Image 1: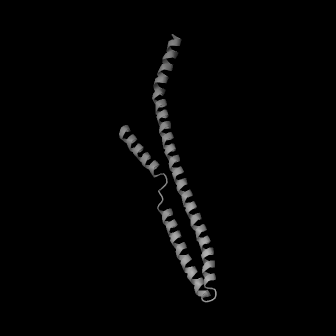
Image 2: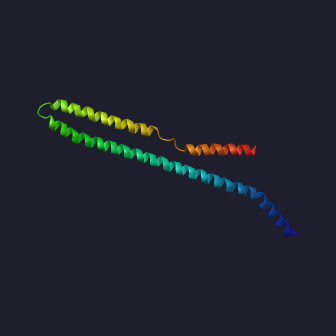
Image 3: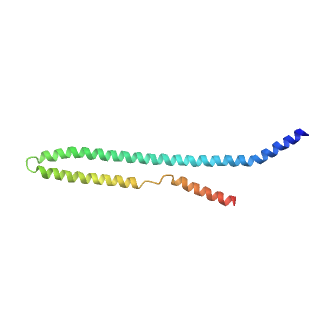
Length: 135
C-alpha cells in the first residue's frame, strides 16, 4: 500500500512538471532562434563595417598616390613658366577629388542598416502572439 502511494505521488509530480518542462523546452528553443538571428545580424553589420573600412582605405590610398604623381608631373611641366599657378591648380583638383570620395564614404556610412531590426521585429511578433494566446 505504501508503494502504491509513492508511485501515485511520482505520477502526479511528473504530470504537473511535464507542462512546465515543455514550456521550458519551448522557451529555450525560442531563445535559441532569437540568439541565432541576433548573431546573423551581427555578422552582417560586421561585414558592412569591414566594407566601409576597405572603401575608406582605398579612397585614402589612391588620393595620396594621385596627389604625389600628378603634383610632380604638373609642377615639372610648368616649372619654368607658371610654377605657383601649377601648384594651386593641382591643389584644387585634388581637393575636389578627395572631397567627392569622402562625401561618398560619409553617405555610405550613414545609409547603413540599423543593427538588430529583424530581431526586434521578431520579438515584437512573438510578444503579441503570446499575449493573444495567454489572455
